[in-house]
Amino acid sequence: MTYVLSSSIERLKEKIRNIPNFPRQGVQFKDITPAIGEGQFFRLIMTIFISRYQKKKIDKIAAIDARGFIFAGALAHSLGVGIIPIRKKGKLPYKTYELPYKSEYGEEILTIHQDAITKGESILIIDDVLATGNTALTAALLIEKCGGNLMELGFLAELCDLKGREKLFPFPCYSILQF
Image (cartoon, rainbow, N blue to C red; front, side, top):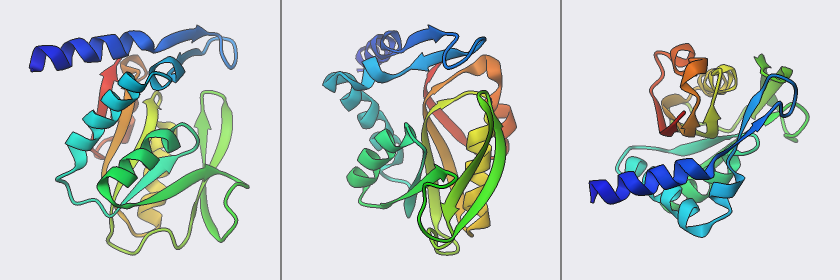
């Protein structure tokens, strides 16, 4: 079974394509769309996430705008928990907390509804790729600002050379794929 899973993960990894200099010069973009565009690979991703989190105490899943929504929605449905959108400024219609951060694309602001979390709830953050860690750290700080307890940050892929995991310490992180 381990060999089959390992072989499947290697095939999944091959489905993530590199796009050089996108969206700007010097950025090596990891395009996940070939992987999520094939049912067998999307199912594999979700099966791995579900098996990791199905027995953990999670009250809600926070999804980082925008590709985190792809996995967080399916995972929240499977686990029977709510979903919290963490979005770029101007996208949420109610009272929000907001925090600025630097992405590899420039200065950004992330927001969360002020009433998204009941104090003490256990929150899992899901996103597609862990790169520099700036976006994920900002999301984690927003969860704490709302009174949530961050259980873990989960990612489809991690770009290890960018050392995002180090920036997120002491928050626990998990990634299915490492590049």
